[in-house]
Length: 599
Image 1 (cartoon, rainbow, N blue to C red):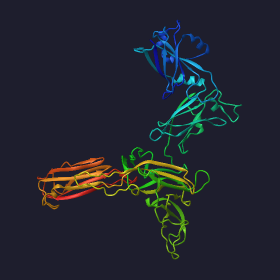
Image 2 (image 1 turned 180 degrees about the horizontal axis):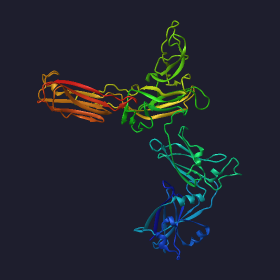
Image 3 (image 1 turned 45 degrees about the vertical axis):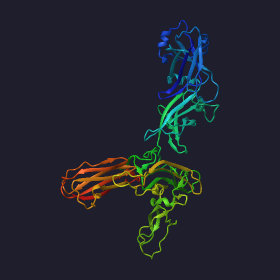
Image 4 (image 1 turned 60 degrees about the horizontal axis):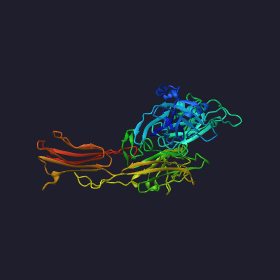
């Protein structure tokens, strides 16, 4: 019966990084009579790995039992049909004409290496005997073996410095620090797990301006440093060339593993336009891309799972002039999409609330004693644009003008806002626009279905995306980034309170309550933070246990109380609600509904 040997092979670059041994030949050999098979079979493969010379490979040819090739995942299946084989131990070699992912360049000699001696544990089946074996060659041996093929590799991960989260789809470039010129060893993009791999050869780090006649680093490895860029070309990490001279980076071997972290929210003095915040909430670090809700408290407001409402300050930076090419004046705008409006729409004048975006110095007669340099606020708002240069009021000489009115910039019909070239500093930094979110995500008074009854149609908010674009005046946008998901809810909470006794036959809201009190309440909102029913009075009465709760959607029901022993007095019944909503700077402060009754 045949013996079928299945397995999978890989090789380590370092403790955290490996590769499947794809497209290599696995060879199985009988042992020679003079070999101590038992000792070899129990030996650790770390002690038995050996690269063979050509004469050693030729000497083993007559002992070959069977061979097979690995697939792209390093898996192989070898059938031994030799009738003289009876399940004893055999030696396992790999034969490689190349190694996986080797960068194409000059041809190299094929190599063979012995991995170990294995005594398979054979399992009898109807079709024959079957055994399996998975093995990953330690990096000390596999990297040496790759080096024989002039195959060099850098394996690494890119994460966010603030959170440790994997950063996908960023470009990593590796450089070698040299005395004459730094060598670009290659680039790669990170995958969804933040992983990247760069393959290169000795030729890539030996070259000089005089190559191929004069090369350097003939014996040592490269001295490595790295640059990381996002998909738009913004540099997220730029290590200095001197980093390649630091311990752990000098004379890197054929395998090198590295962990890089980047700041995903760069701030000035970088000179590229960038959308950074909604109010005080960082658009990447503080707002979940999954549900559009905040994930933490920031400066005393918001918290886990807070949505947004009201007028939102969209913050960031836009310079006066283009940071690339000619120094043309810059402009910027914000756009949005919704689940039903998938083509980005500009946030135009009808969706903008006044916001201070900066200041400038003008000549102004504040005190009626002559012109002096005076600070003038710059506002972006939906109407009321003021001309530039500064308007001069028509007043009699010697009349104090008082403080100057703000200089007002109004977005055009496509939402574009011109950066004031007379403004202070290098551009607008901080609030860039205040977005009236209810013009895109309407709300209002949420309809209820009566106290004690759940709303027939509970209202919900909507998740939208906000896109930032910037570029020179008269040209298409050259910079863009976005908040992919922000959840907005502009509905008020349903807060309904009533007493059943007020609606009994012949009763009114002024009827005296004697024995029974039935409180009907409905507190409903998609993002309810907390709600509670309460009773207060000047009389001393036994405090009842009343309904309350936290989290969406609230609560609904009827609470019965026996008030027959309560003192005769007036009482105040309340329903207090507070929503998990913020405008980025101020949270919902809550609301209370009241009813009174007499006992």
